[in-house]
Length: 342
Image: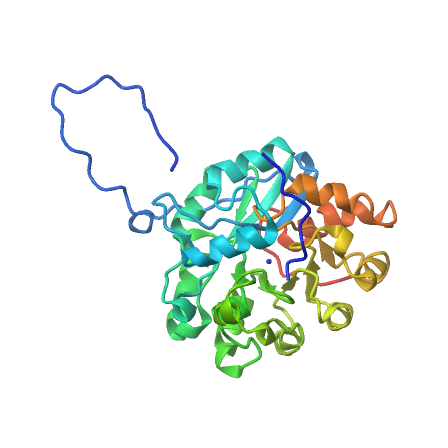
């Protein structure tokens, strides 16, 4: 796949020809099947010993019916911001990208229906795509916290019926404060399910360059808002997505202080990482940071080339690229985990 150009900081239909003989009678094709009407349950098929890395942050933003996760102007603006060559690859294209590189990838979308009046691409379709590529893909679900009790019910459905392995949130895009107690029932439910969450922190590429940032408020991506959640739900594993500029010191402190908080390194080329993040990744955060790209906005090849230039200890690199994720996701056991730090 074509690589992106130098990437500025983040801020983060498949045919089927059966070959059967033609029938003597013909009829007009019916509508495409709705995955939600006959949902596929994901079963983990990743062999941790057969992969070299786990990308914790990959977006699938279009489903098999062509519906996109967000309004079109977001895609145009983010493609310009990140200089990305392909903005909406299919799930099968994503799978092949990672299979060729002997990597696994956590794949998700974001449900921001309340904020933008636009439903996300189908979660059921995403899970079905990951299920048929379960040797390399791991699906995370997403719900809109602002839908209240419906969010709890949908999160439970995605976990118990679809088999998602975690959940993705983007407080700025979804327009909510994760520390607001009205959302505590959702965090409690996810803690009960034993599934981790990935939550955007720091600068936003989404809405960048648009008037008013398209209404996106950066304050909701302050990692300190997740500190309350981590303290009040100690068995909920929280992954703070991206270097959290302009709040990197806060993120470093939270991840150091809270055993259930981690940092994924997606959304930025490693050559732009804050020095404090690189320094602490070499010592106190060495078992808390996770490889992530933000694909398709940043390709794994480009991210890894810049990562190779960082002044990291040799023993730390495999922890970041693979081992920390294997432990957090339970890939060595084949089940979701509520990992606690040693």
